[in-house]
Length: 220
Image 1 (cartoon, rainbow, N blue to C red):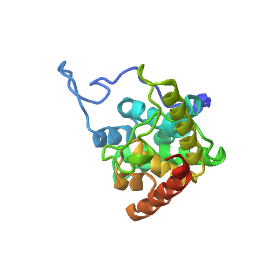
Image 2: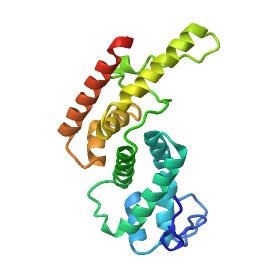
Image 3: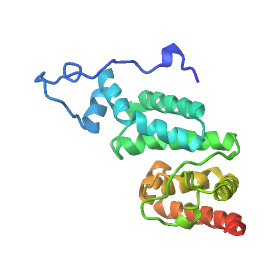
Image 4: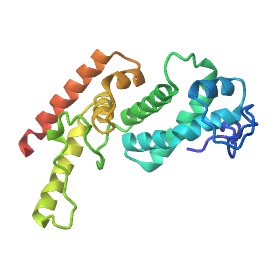
């Protein structure tokens, strides 16, 4: 995606104390998100640039993972921060900037998945820290030198089965499952990103897990 020149986020090469109205003492500075947002809402482009710097890697990583494509992920990453810049004046501090920007990203990814009809893709992710439902996820191929060709082949077969099973989920089910298990996010956090209740997210996760178990029953 190429953003028109008139719509591009103003670029600032680095954040300095003068740009943020801070005294220059030579010591590193760490301005919290709320202060940066307020400065950016007043037109301080350096403050917004710092917000981008703090979250750009995480946003890009999430977008690439959820879309399964570096190119599509880059487009969504760019679009997410553009939307954040355009709508920052409406930010009312009812949630964290982290939740707000992730909500923008996940909604863009949901739209993308719906348009592409949730096509399958390769997985190179890990289980959630609590290990919940790891029986579905811990049987990925072993690429270590000691792995036998037979085991590697079986692992690739299983990986393809998991990809196909994920492709059978609705975009929202897949999004919730991946945010929970591949990114280790709490259901409350996922609910905030998708602007719904924790109970709704639990139900969505249950449906997604049930569908995956049904799809993978024959390969256990």
